[in-house]
Length: 148
Image 1 (cartoon, helix red, strand yellow):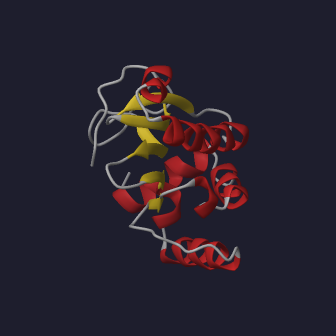
Image 2 (tube, rainbow, N blue to C red; image 1 turned 90 degrees about the vertical axis):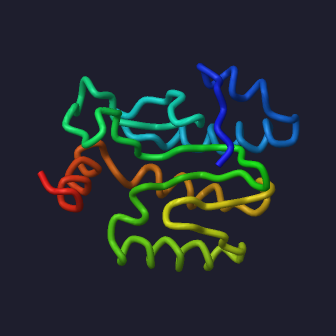
């Protein structure tokens, strides 16, 4: 994974090539328009992340905020990371089915949806997926999969 040393989201966007900057900015806008209350946008792990601040929930295994989603420009693709999608087999299968129903080709790892251009990404589905999990829901998912 390509990791940026940018300290702010604006700095991260500024270091991207024009075509990728526009695509990442469009996905970012979709995320921000649908992001439930309580998550914050920041730079972490060398990418734009959407996470629960430690002030809200400090009980993480690594002392870092609990990440909900992320957005990155990698060497050969761009990616949006949706951690809630792989919380259960049911949620992963549902996301895959809904993605395929858009007619777009899905290129997905465990939580990352890879795309080379914005045209390959169903922004409505990304927005719906982002909107679907509140901070309390993500904490509950994390606790059920990682122990309390």
